[in-house]
Amino acid sequence: MVSRVVSLLVFAGLLLAGGAAEAARIKDLADVRGVRPNQLIGYGVVVGLNGTGDSDKTRFTIQSVVSMLSRMGIRVDARGLKLKNVAAVIVTSELPAFARAGNTIDITVSSLGDAKSLTGGTLVVTPLRGHDGQIYAMAQGPISVGGFSVEAQGGGASETKNHPTVARIPDGAMVEREINVDLGSREHVVLQIRDADFTTAARMAKTINMNLGGGFATTPDPGTVKVQVPPPYAGRVVDFVSIIERLEVTPDAVARVIVNERTGTIIMGQDVKIAPVAVAHGNLTVSVRRTEEAVPAAPLTPGDTVVTQNADIEAKEDKVPLVELAEGATLADVVTALNRLGATPRDMITILQAIKRAGALRADVEVM
Image 1: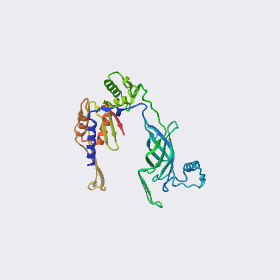
Image 2: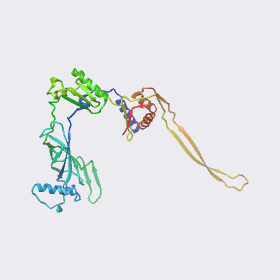
Image 3: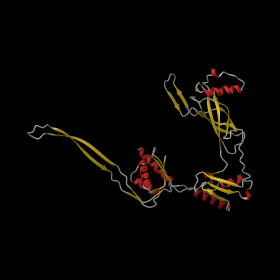
């Protein structure tokens, strides 16, 4: 029953994948060059843990606490510190494009030492730096852990759900430095197509030119569309981009078959076609039975009775029709033919791989 349900789900997925390609907004297909987030990273300390912090073996945690207290005017001996309630962490985040000073961003806090859990901890103020070494945000606040960890005393049992050593702080960092992106003085807007394709780039440029009434868009390469800002929109690039990103384009892609052998899932695009090929699929069953037979000695002879072993071999093969697929068979033809053979999802994977190996499948096969 489970196999049949999986087969129906896969068949439904194949039919959905075989529908006509729909137009999408340029906003969903491309990005404006220069408008992107930037990664931030910082090293910090989480305090207030309930005995689940780093052990004494994590020396850099002790050094961090000594350095932090020293900046506050407190001198301590590192040899006498036992910090079970403190954990060293790495703080990561993304600075969105056009983020301004005073905006807040989410951060992720990950344990760097051997802490067992960050539950209940508070991140001490941590500077977040960009790839240029400059500080762009400051992070601090109580952390939120989406998991728990239970450990019985005396080494009884231990239970861990999710990852208690990774936490989030919503709006946990405040932007201190801005990344200036000057759009107002630009004479061209460059669109970067997320999935580079010659046909998609050509269609995008054609759609833009048809709506702007001129040859404003060009395609230097299959992943880029360069659009000249019309004179009426000089100094108003934001308004111009808002018009372009609402235009709809039908994207194109290489015919592809995605196969997940672990789950028996097959997804095929609408452009998947095959050359003339014949497919037969059936189950061959071979049964071997051993029997013993006593052969008595010939009458009036001194010989003894001999026990011999006989082997009966029976081969049985299910009668399955040979299905022929004509030139240019489409996705619906492939699915219909495979289901006529009574193929399960895993059988379909084997059949598709065999058709590809025979050179009859006109699509790329990607195995996950």
